[in-house]
Amino acid sequence: MLKTAVMVSGGGTNLQAIIDAVSEGRIKGVQIVRVISNKKDAYALQRAAKAGIGSTVVSREDHPDRREFDEALLKALDDSGADLIVLAGFLVVLPAEVTRRYAGRIINIHPSLIPSFCGEGFYGLKVHEEALKRGVKVTGATVHFVDEGCDTGPIILQRAVSVEKGDTPEILQRRVMEQAEWKILPEAIELIAENRVVLKDGRAEIV
Image 1 (cartoon, rainbow, N blue to C red):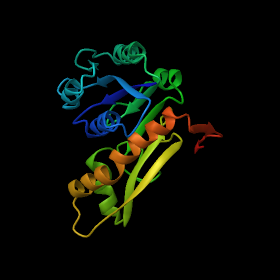
Image 2: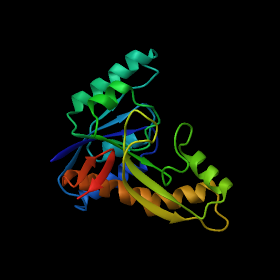
Image 3: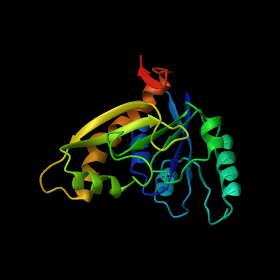
Image 4: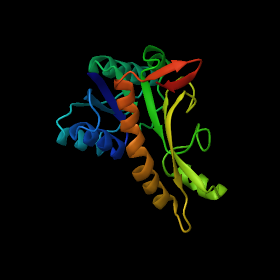
């Protein structure tokens, strides 16, 4: 059983996609053992409670000192006993100690086809605003391992989504979630649970 902790900051739609995939048996051998949020009012916490999943809040409000916050975050992860950490809309840069301790065991979902529209400052609607501004015809989502860089870890899965005439950032965001994010994130978790993702020479290979 792959014990999984999911880290969130907001609505938790990707968390819900994982919860649904597990409960409906679409991914097997996976247990969500903890939901960790940096926001006390994150709706994702309600999704976790409804699914009977325990949650922990580690906020800057309670830990104004960054070092103290980082230590609390690491403790929450260690206490969860998770084998895999999933960043599902977690809008905090992980401290280096976390990425080092859990190297090869943290994945993230990003709403673009990396290396496009990624890196520092590219999150949420900003990604889709920039994609539309650039005039791309195809965008999508990427699941990748997390390293000490920003959206620089090995890519596990990607799925393309067409940009359509009349798209607004909000419309495009919803299409990318529905057609890509909510599909490839559970799929990547299942591949990891099946030991089918291998890190080799800085790349993630599916075997």
